[in-house]
Image 1 (cartoon, one colour):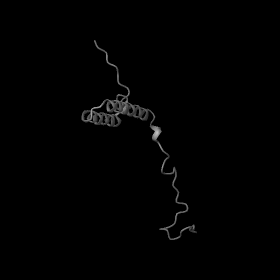
Image 2 (spheres, helix red, strand yellow):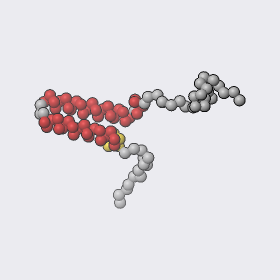
Image 3 (cartoon, helix red, strand yellow):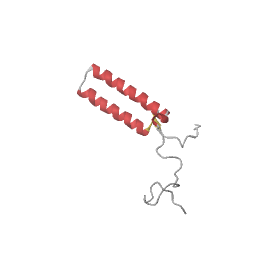
Image 4 (cartoon, one colour):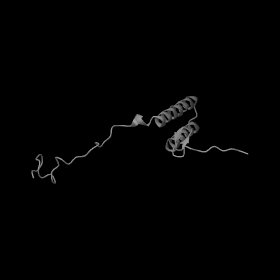
Length: 99
């Protein structure tokens, strides 16, 4: 009788060739575009450049998917927001309201 393993990584993202689905779609779009370039301008130099382009794109996308903090910039918003020195509709600019 055949034994089946339980798939325990159900919460992980779907991955095709080491890339998430959106990055894989970008890679396939690049491959199809470069195939069109090869078809309409067949030249050995073009084939060589297209091969290097697709290889470099694949390496860059796999590095980006393995290390997503590469393009992570600082947060736009501060951790806390305070209304301590805020004024009512800008009427009392620069003055703290006294009670």
